[in-house]
Length: 346
Image 1 (cartoon, rainbow, N blue to C red):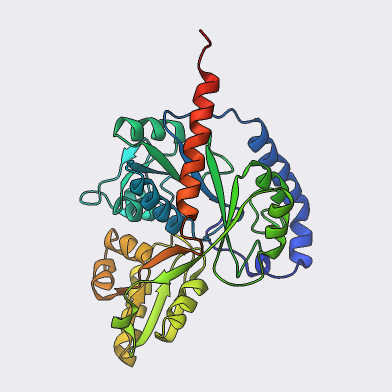
Image 2 (image 1 turned 90 degrees about the vertical axis):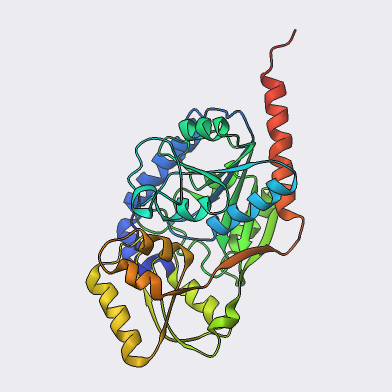
């Protein structure tokens, strides 16, 4: 997958997507076969998968964090399982924020590990085994819906209400990871994040398939300290514009915004340009928590930028307060039914 989404992915289907449609059709066929035929291994504890339909960000990590709160509210220990995209992990690794960096384990694992036990592992079943050995009682898997070799007890698909699935075409003709109908067939629920109408078609499809549809929004935490300042905002996430709009909605003046590809490693010249521009125009630097952990683990002037940048933290708030607990409860109930069915009859 690519880290920088071509603009035509988020526009009405045109010549570029038409030319790539045959490749997308082949990719979709392969993705369908993987989803339908891949043998998945059961874990020793319930597994909740937080996935999305498209390449790029949609709010998976905030969703995973919110679900961890719900798991703990039930008196259980959550454990995050992530591939560690952007890092160099080759075997299951318990993420230690005091000793690891984003360069080794990836930026999202560093964020998750601030909240709860986290394992980064390209091999999801092996990562799940390590989490269980470390005491996790419910596994929350960040991404991996289309390809992971684990049995899910509940798969919630997160979609951005503002961007939806773009042109609806399968990669590389569009941002979709696998045919939408196939993905919905394997999903248990849909979570629509934010406001907008771009996800309406998917909502209708989910409703026809009798899949529960939940809604939520990202809420900025402590934005007051940034209000009244002129900011230079920068972000290297799946959807930088979403971050910039969140700043504006929180009453923070964005004098200049600079977006970079997801998981981007900032070069010294890029860092220098950000710092120089902020100094020249008297702007406050502001970025995301994900970008900050990447800078803190970087080289050269990355630490200088990290020390100067303010971070706008966000929290996912469900429109229905019981939503996260419902997802956790359903996953636990399905896990128990699965274990009972697998037990030998005496």
